[in-house]
Length: 433
Image (cartoon, rainbow, N blue to C red; front, side, top):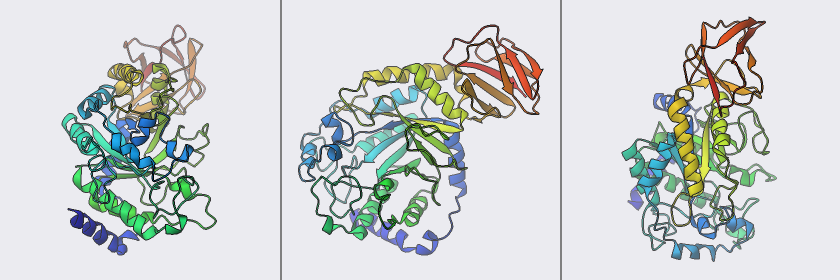
């Protein structure tokens, strides 16, 4: 198997003629993009050896842990509570349509069996199970898509050319060998796209590790993206680089912000025409943090999902599973609340696009055909002006009850009279155009 996968990777990368050509998405890819936009809600899972430390996924960097000492964590990695089917069921019941999981984070440990080294859950731990294979099988059984996070950087490998992070792990900088490291990454990507069934997306992270180099660093992304698209044409490529999308990418990511916002300082890039995704944490950390109980309320999370949809984006909500493999109870009860809300209001979210009414402080709109859903999230008045331009409104009603809502033509829009100021998490009006 090892020789076969290496041969496939080398063969595909050797075809530089197609790797260097302008990117033209296949029909399968275009369809996958549309389906991705319809899905609207995914759950992100950051899980690995760092979870055992209970202080977040950057512990190796933040504590300057030696690259020789850190792997010793693998010797006691035994998440006895891990149950892929339970994970998938809880996430599916929450209304999420896909799962994105860290196959290999910046610490270099793989949650899947790989021929590249024994530093993985199967060959390097007493657990001896392939996390990604079990999760992929559970996703296929329960009808939910699987996306795979993959780190472009590695704080543990000496052949990785060191960037601006992981400098305290003790590696010999002179041993950097980009050709070796690039081959390693593409071999692992070939494994992931060959051995685990259909993959919805490869979600890259770490490009920014070399964003301060005096000479621009060449990640050789076109060839790598071409490898992915060749192995699975429908597989979408995303890169959390905080920049304008590169050719070959199929999704634009906004970290800790909605498109067009930059409150976290990571998402100042222009909005492209690609499908959009906002990744956010359910509390304050990506990886499990034993002291972090600052979970966002169900109201905050539901409104975050709605505002993302109103900005024509998906919400990818992150949870850090516990060291033992269970999803935290505080996360589960919030997932349950989101699922209950989506059972009632999912029609106004799934399969929609950002509506003709632009986002406002009071809320957003989503739209499907001639149905415009006005999501009123924060309004202290009983009436509200809706800018409609030259679009005519045939009827208006409260989505949840079907009760007609009175409206009057006002300038270039209409004023809806709701009778009293909305008190719901999301007061949804359905307008027929």
